Amino acid sequence: MEKQINSRDVFEALAKDYIREDTHWGSDLDLIKASLDELIKTEPNPRWLDLGCGAGFHIAAMAELYPEVSIVGVDHSQQMLNAAKYKIKNLGLKNIALNNSDITKKFQEGKYHLITSLNNAFGNLYVSGTDQNEIRAGIAGKITDALCSKGCLILSVYNIEKFNEKSQYCSNVTVVENLSDLAKGDLIAEYRNKGKKVLYYTHWFSEGELRELAKETGLKIDFLERRMSRFLVRYKKD
Ligand SMILES: C[S@@+](CC[C@H](N)C(=O)[O-])C[C@H]1O[C@@H](n2cnc3c(N)ncnc32)[C@H](O)[C@@H]1O
Image (cartoon, rainbow, N blue to C red; front, side):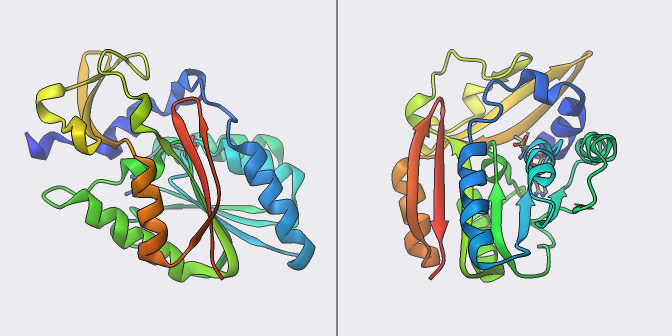
């Protein structure tokens, strides 16, 4: 069963309808905008890395407002990146580079003033046969190294307090309870599309885990809010 879990395939299949299905659209844009406003006071050309950028709606929306920000979007789904490319081309944006890469295998090089991982992209990281907590901790360490001093990390992740076993958080998606560990927030979901079924991993976070991440990385939380079924949190580097 383990072998069938494939987070990349599900996003390949979801890519076309992804934004239409996302009822949380934009619920984190204000914090990203406020962070960019703060950054450009001291850094005229900030660098922003978006991990698991998907169809690129955050980076495209902000790139238009902040042409002075250099943005890199990384994702391992080519279909998602194609949707992002289409948007970037249509809007004539020149300040976004996209990179197809699995960040659990190869982390993006460089130093960044802002790093984001939004709409639970951080909770989707999955490496078969491994403790997914360790995968997240490893990536959090790499993010910390990649942040410039005074830089910040913004995560929007699913909030375990809001998890309801009966809920379908996306049409065509059902939680496979016998494969999931609800107490740990580790869910395996089945995505169905045109007769094809794909299992994928999604982690739902507790506030304690998000605070623990700050302790492990040495980053400081300066913003944490519950928004719909998410936590929106900003970490800062000294
Ligand atoms: C729930 S979507 C969020 C997309 C985007 N951040 C947004 O807000 O719309 C999660 C994204 O993370 C990407 N992803 C998951 N695991 C990844 C990995 N190991 N490396 C790169 N991208 C990954 C998926 O392909 C997907 O596009």
